[in-house]
Image 1 (tube, one colour):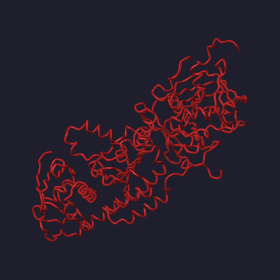
Image 2 (image 1 turned 180 degrees about the horizontal axis):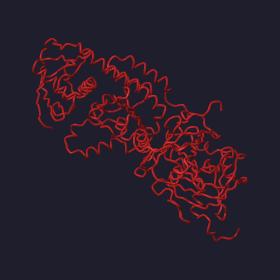
Image 3 (image 1 turned 60 degrees about the horizontal axis):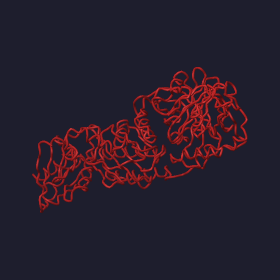
Length: 452
Length: 170
């Protein structure tokens, strides 16, 4: 072998698709061998093993930390022996959560849901890798070549001039360059510890505006831990269909169900991955992809999406910053007077408690986006104004925007998209950096509500 | 040879039937300095009196394992039925390396076919299984031992429990 074996090239062996064996040696000199549910790649020098039960393997490694793993490539059947040394056990944090999610998929796949409970991620240093001879199948190449796909996607992102365009470019890149058919992009609302969908592809309903709290499901855990979460098999513990049922059961207010925007998503995804989109150390968004095929997203795709996410996150932060600074120069526009719309008036209700807005009887949006719409419609009603600036919204204390990272632009995009989907007579159109226009196709009647 | 009364150390017939039912098998040995190592096996037979088990494996894949067995005779073997996850580990202290019998080479193909059938339930393609357990007949080596300990290792909180004589893992 001309080049030494590197764990980076052997990551398919560490997906848990073919169980690995771990051989340990007791203090009495007797060997012990068992199959392991999960052996996970940490970095080129480290792997992690799931610690679920106190067993002989664990007793042995605590007394004598050196072990051998015999692992197989799930495509070629190539075999490798790793000599590993136990270092420590992590019981919380990103590695633990990655392993917990992955294990949930394996447990579900093996009919062991409720049996497998992760107590810790045992981290081992890899001291040696030996290729074991034997017959191998030729490697299979499937899916797009990832580096060219990544480069095309980064090129496309860097050409974007607006956050709106960037969001669409990101989703199109996943679709066209990476062949991903089902995806959601969720913006982070850091102060509220929630994420909301701004774009999705591959579903009957876009789910724009639907929210996921940090820590819930694959997406929420990825956001809370700021780490990619990837599951190779259907995992009922992380399925959003179940989460929705649980949330409905736990909800103290029945009307919450009416106001919630249903999450899109495959009913029983066989593969799932959520990738945090970071601007430096700040979470900006989470990209979520899923598939009906098992084992569809591997370590390499995870790497590619993390790299793409890093590029997208910085671009998003830069655009948000540029929008904000452009607003400084933007004068509050007067705009030409426009004839009042005619037709049957649309009744718009606004609930102060959560900012939710209903068009007629139909729920539109809540939170900051809902309050923004209410403020625009109220202004229009009083003064006939249709032209607005981001800056005046930012300065409006009634909107209660956080002082830093308010993501106002993202909320306007959310509102704009939600109106496009849910209303045939209300529109918000961007008219320049930090400026936008409210379009009304019908007169509106504003009905403030004190409580929900 | 014709004595039919089981020896007290003989494997339970159900255990003997289980471990020869074309399972996933790995054999471990230790090097005397505290390092255990392992190899995948490609066949298993049980002696007529059920007191000795013989594992078959490719010699080219087993070199560190064979060195350990030659030095101290201590072995552990894990048997796993993929579809049911039923798993058993047997250990012995008197392992020795042997030349395979002529029928051992003949058993390679039936083992591969049976193992492939076992894995078909998990959608593992047959060519993959055949590659995984392929062994040239002239590369075959046998390791036999008298099992002195048995452990149930089916995943779950009871994994690792020592099995009493005659007890079968469920």
